[in-house]
Length: 233
Image 1: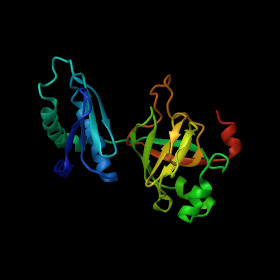
Image 2: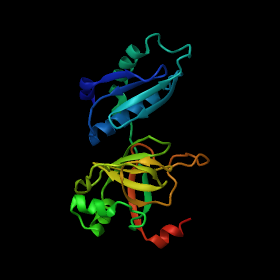
Image 3: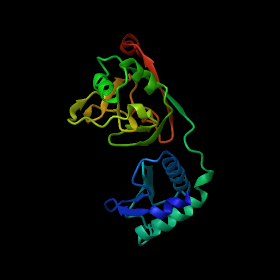
Image 4: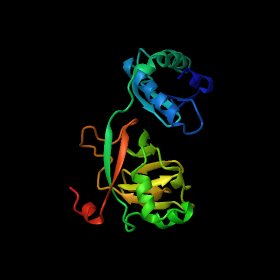
């Protein structure tokens, strides 16, 4: 954990947040440490902190710039705060939940299965097994509300993003790129390779909590048939 401080870079995010970046690439162990650090920061219950958001390579702290308790120099104070929080981060348990996600890998919904097969040189039926049997972990949630970025993709399926992004990707689409999987929480543009679709809603504003996924969650993708998908729920 302490070695992360050697590469720490602080950046302001407007006038109400600070982002601490510790590494420039995806590192599963480092990401787990960052999630523990985020938990340690939250546990301090600082009245001027609005939210602590772990990312893939860092942690963002959102604060109330008008709170009377806000330190006069937030950037300088934040580095001190990080150093103190890192000392206690190891005692915080990260994740623990297992989120089961049914996925229909039928080619009608898995729009890029043939391209993935050709690029990765993996038979289409093997793509499903490789994806469903990998140990997936949520690295962060972002881009759109509730959208998870999930690590643990089998290296055999590490294909690049599409050369031409789609202007509309259906909500619930399960897609892969490089070393990660994502689940589109809303219909949005996107350039990841669509491998299937889940009938679950990744984000529902009337649900408590609204997001299906949280950083640190372990994800188990379960293959279902087209019929099961269409009759779900």
